[in-house]
Image (cartoon, rainbow, N blue to C red; front, side, top):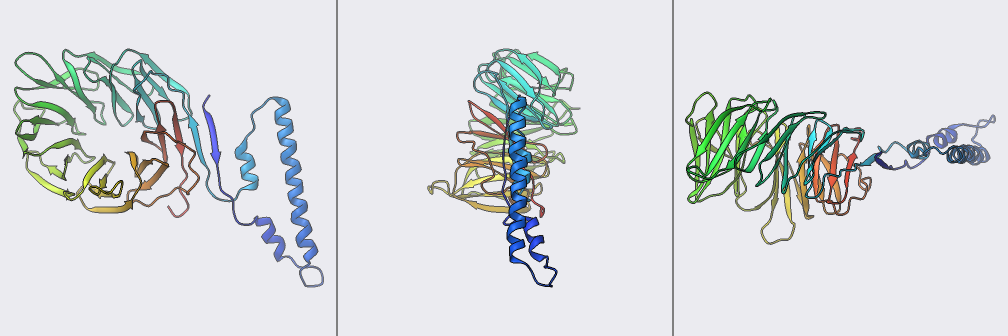
Length: 410
């Protein structure tokens, strides 16, 4: 069973104490003796009840419910809980959200736990370099440089494939359609294959030159974007799945495009080493956000927003977090001088893992966790946003799901 840890804060003064201070004696004035004795007696009664509860619970062999105890002595500060999940899928573990459930892929296969920490699925197979991508409760796990690929939901495998060439990358959209970039010997260097949600191939692109680093499918299953890296620069080709030839291509001569993603409204965005670029259906590009004076530390597309971690050149970890709307409009900005190890987006929030802990922010970068409430996660190297304001913090040796509660003003 998952291990649970709870931390909470307390209020400045018990409400019972405040109420007793407002009472007056029969003579119309307050009685100092009553104010001192009654709260003390009440506290003694609570202490006796708590000690009795602990004794009875231990004698009966049951587990102590510490959340009840913190409720007696604590105030209204929301609790932060953490569950440790026992993933045993081998080494090089990677994680993904499955609509609140947590999926892991490792050198020994895949494993899924539901939100309560119960294992719902396990599939054993070998991967040398495991990778995973997820969307809307589905995930694709694959072996980079290998040939194995599995598509699954919380409780079942929906497709399993062995491709001909070495897998470069794979991605899945919200409808369960997925695309795979692979490298094959022979006339073509790279192949991009589109599969529907049953694992049937429905479209294929063959590149005679360059290197298909990644590809993305639009949320409506109608368009495919392929990122091709060439000696002369980077190129994003746009394909309509009803036609064989591309509708257009965006070229960045001498520049490096790092990734290409379809956003929530089927808008295509390319992230380069210096800017975010919106690309239309025929390959025309427009700069959404320019950060050429800074170094890109991280890029996360969210549901309706984009998050960037930007670093000042040559100044340690000094930099800033920036959130943008899908049209490039500014939403929030936050200066930081701590190392950001990993970021992940959820439904309307951003999880940020730093070297000293994890924080959650809304799309305007307002934090909604209390300082000091986060359990210790020293050594964590990655985070994955889950549903209901929770996030996974993981390392090679542990995986902890932390659940936060937003304060009243959020």
